[in-house]
Amino acid sequence: MLDGQVEGAISTSVLEEVLHVELRTTTLDLRGVAGLAYGMFTPLLPVTDEVMKLALGLGELALGSNDRVHVATCRLNEIDVIVSADRGFDSVSGLRRVDPLDADAVAALVG
Image 1 (cartoon, rainbow, N blue to C red):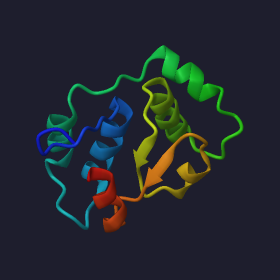
Image 2 (image 1 turned 120 degrees about the vertical axis):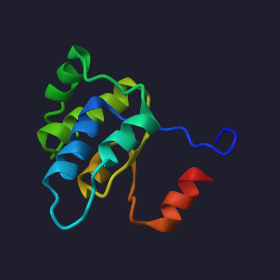
Image 3 (image 1 turned 180 degrees about the vertical axis):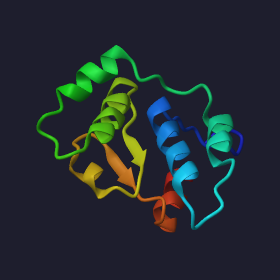
Image 4 (image 1 turned 90 degrees about the vertical axis):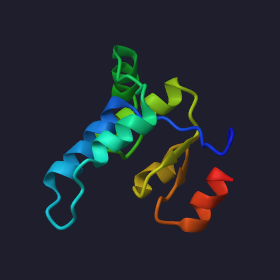
């Protein structure tokens, strides 16, 4: 934590997922959430050729395509904590998942 701020990053792939949820969700008013996330996390981590190459090589993991991109992005950017409700990340060695719905875990993460 620096001056009351928490360090964090998201990739273009994560922001696309946020935008998708914002545009598709009908039960909640999520207008502007993607723009807010962009403002908080810009500059975004890019999904590069190197990220895709690594994601394609993650055959041993029981993850979907975009989750593989997230793992590859984390590995290439030396990120060892991912905030996600997706338990599939629990099986990824070298990556610790923090559930955003677990208030205690989030509090411990942000100090």
